Each structure stands twice: as C-alpha cells, then as structure tokens.
Image (tube, rainbow, N blue to C red; front, side, top):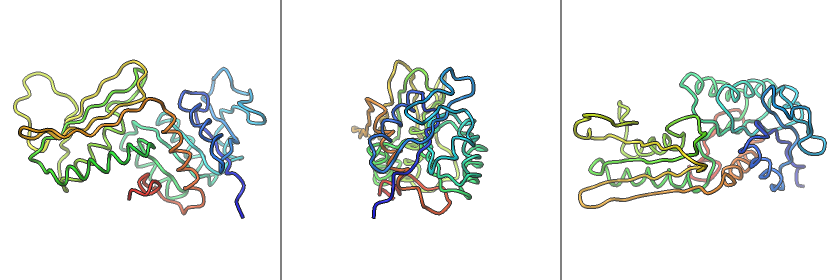
Amino acid sequence: MTRPPLKVLVVGALGRMGECVRAAVADHPELVLSAALEAPGHPELGGEIEDGVPVRDDPKAALGACQVAIDFSVPTATLAVLRAAADAGVAYVTGTTGLSADEKSELAALAGRIPVIHAPNFSLSVNVLAWLTREAARRLGTDFDAELFEIHHAAKRDAPSGTALRLAEAVAAGRGPTPEDHRVRERAGATGPRKPGAIGIQTLRGGDSPGEHTVMFVGQGERLELAHRAHTRDHFARGAARAAVWLVGREPGLYPIEQVLGLD
C-alpha cells in the first residue's frame, strides 16, 4: 500500500531557489506542497502561492501542516525555522551555507530532536565529484598540489562556497588525518613558496552562474582536473526533494547527503 504524498514546507518559497524547489516538489509523485514561508515584510505575504497554500511568515503556523521542510535560505532564517521544526517534530532538509561554527553546533544539537540533512550541495554529480576528489587525493598523495577554483553568481553571500569547502575537506580526508587546517583562501603580496600540503581555494563572483567547481591536482609535468559546471538550479532542487522523501520517518539525527545518494 503506497503512502499518501508527504506534505512539504518550502522556506523562502518565492525566491529563485524556492521556485526551483516548488517545481521539484510538484514533479515528485511522493511530495505535495502544503506550506510556503517567506520573510516578514515580503510583499506577497497572505496571498496564495497555489490553491489553498498561503504565503506565511510565521514558522510555527507554516509547519503545522507539514511533515518535512526544505530550506535554501540564510543562516539566521534557517536556524529560526529549524528551532520551530524541532518543536513541531518536522523533518528538515537544508542547503543553507555560510553557517558559523556556533551555528553549525546549534544545528547539530537540534538534529538530536528531529531528522536533519544539511548539505552544501544536493546535486548527485557534485557529490560524486567529492567522492572522486577524496579518492584522487588518497592515491596521488601530497606529491600533487591541490588547488580548487569556484565561481558563483554575483548575489551569493558567502565565500568560498559551501561546496568548495566540502571539496577541500574531501582532499584533506583523502590525504589522511592532520591537526592543521591547510586551506589557503587567498594569496596576495609576497607569499613566498607554496607551503607543503596546502589546499588552495580561489573564489570568483559574477553574473548569474549557479556554480562551477574545479579541483586540480598539479604534479611535476602533469595535472589532473575534476570539474562540475551547473547550468541551472533544478538539479539541486531535485536532490533536495529526493532527500526529503528519504528523510521522513527516520530517527532523529544529522544525516549525510552521501547516505541518501548511496555514496557512503
């Protein structure tokens, strides 16, 4: 016997990513949009985003009709809605990036009450890229210098991107445990020779690019490049919808996206 569609709250439902998430929910046979949340003061508050689904700014009221929330917003908004979701017992899927260490700690604590997936990127191919990056770093070792390049649209608020940081973590994981953070986020002036084990991250912003990431392993006389280029936001939204279906009914905890995608 198939279960009825799972009721979804979309946080930031009228934003660019929110529109993509709503489309992904509409296309998924196991999901239905039941609530839409926007920031206080939004000009379309009170109107219906579709039949019977009003745009609200009260997380508690929006969560009352839902089983899972999908959120690609900003850290302060995400934590505010996540606190309300923990109180309401609603599962939570979020791709919000730019969280501080303290905000990540609070997110993890709230995941002790409800099932949560927090990932910098919900694309299947990007997560395969992270897996390949880890394996390449493990097999090539520190004889190959690791450099990461990323570009996103001009409106992106955090830099480097969460995906770039995730790829840097994959390099570090492939090379083995180390007590130091070898990430180098900028280079300017008389930097001196490249430090052994450094993981360079170069950030560009401009236009409307949904995101491009390239990992380079640079050796003596050769270079390996692993790259992903996004042309739309649709695949991020589809991945989040897939994660929402997977998450509902799980025990409380902070689940890795790799587990959802079968990459763990």
